[in-house]
Amino acid sequence: MINIDEHTITQAVIDRLDGCDNPRLKLVMTSLVRHLHDFARDVRLSESEWMTAIAFLTATGQKCDDKRQEFILLSDTLGLSMLTVAMENDKPAGATEATVFGPFHIDHPPEFRGGDNISGGASGEPLFVSAKVIDTNGKPIKGARVNIWQADAEGLYDVQHSELTGHQARGILFSDEHGAVDFQTVLPVSYPVPTDGPVGQMLLSTGRHPWRPAHVHFKIDAEGYQTLITHVFREDDDYLQTDVVFGVRSSLLGQYVRHEGGKAPDGRTLDHAFYTLNFDFVLANLVAS
Image (cartoon, rainbow, N blue to C red):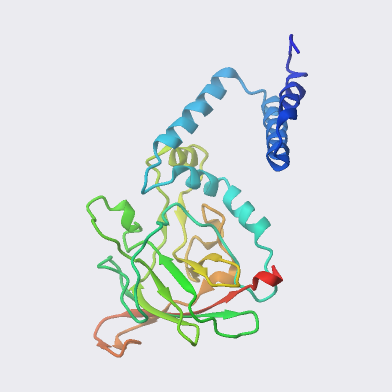
């Protein structure tokens, strides 16, 4: 087809996909083309505006490295990450809800034993976490792989500290025969997502704040169960209602209890304040998904 115009180009592009032998890819690409073209028509997108968008996407890719994923941040702040999470995690009643993965996970964090301090010198008030991994019938799950990561008192993850050579406030533990996972870390605080890149510029340009409520990340894997990616938020945080990545669920609010010194869960007597958190993670069986 030649002499294509704004009314005929969409179908012309879709027709070029007839040779695609992957049905799912063909479906996704057809819908993508149709919606992109409809969007451009709807807002009467100009050539200069589209070039600005291309420059934005190029800068987003250039901001990515092995410690930062700006495209995940873009997806998160547009609500697309949470939309896909919500669509794919229709869990049975009682199972812990999932939320966004975030851009600061790493593949090979250090492993710890139950009761260890995973903070690695991260700044912040002491936090003792006592968690359980159970199924929807309340049965303990032994050997669950619990991956934990969080920001420090400065609101920064270890990968954001350029001077660090090791890891802080992240690690892997395995649940014991009672499903228990106990560890020490630091109290999470609310923090802004990075605003020094194109996504941050987009947020500020559109009048949005960049803040996330305080939370600890968890990724939990156990044989025979759905993988759970979630957070446990501080229930008293000021940004729960306006999380920049739309990830808060009321079922994920934890009670981070302040203690003005005294006997800590690890048996020590502390002369300074510390916090405790108790939380049960309920995994959905793969058969029930």
